[in-house]
Image (tube, rainbow, N blue to C red; front, side):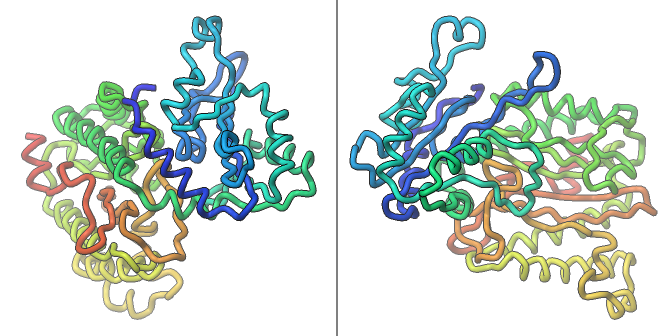
Length: 429
């Protein structure tokens, strides 16, 4: 791992919090992700399943975590199963977790090799009534590949059909959406690395560079700061490319007079950052670009102030829509007739701002969180309004990551990343 060791208290606390939500006489099982093949003997870089990482800190393939708070044997109330390491594996693949290192990482005292899983599992399954399985119920999930977790669940339910079954996901959705101090520090580090990348490209961008050149500059800075790279596929969209919301080709020349919409974020220790900024290729905004930019920034600032404990996500988006409608009227993009005759299901402002304003942030870029429940302190949200004008050849999106506070305005994890027009122009010139 590139990142510095994480205090195991994070994972010990996370497991305790999960265990308190479990039914009596129940156990929960969590699996690592697969290593996914590409072709021949090639594989994609391993990315750990966020749930087992959240609960253990284990960041390697072929790992299994069991939580069984009511187990008669105290040593089986938390168990890690790991792929056995040896000198041969160390030479060919690099160092894997030993039992001692696994305890140091996770705080789990009982560690077995994976070959003992079925034997130990048989013993503890005879001692419990309910088994928690870990299904993906995220509101954006669309999984076509059968995951290691899904294969294991299929095997488990076939082998132990008499057990009651419960779901881990609702517990994790609520726990993972509220961050503790260690997590907030990791998120801050991810945002700080993103800031370094952004400041680097402000000194780099000029007419004639290509979008992929800018992507490369970000990656250089991210890797130099212990990040694996981008938290998600980066968007570097110059000119009209910015009006394609998920533009990821990043292969066009940046031309004088155009704007570049950047939607990029570094990961750090599996935690994500998510930033959007829009900058002028030539180092100066035109008056029209500046007017639209400042309108988006005003919406962002006012929307941020709405993120408080008790706020309902759907109601919040209705209020943001009103802010955006006012700005679009001021810019001459909408008139009063457009608003009076709008379809309530697709308001007039959606012509120029068609996506949502905020989503949960954390281990996943679109992190866990139940959107129908009130917001709480220490939840982390993006704030990302935009205005997209294909007929004028540019689109603008601005985005920060903020932490909801018990009282007052949210704390901006990206407070040091330049965003005001004057600051952007000064740094580019």
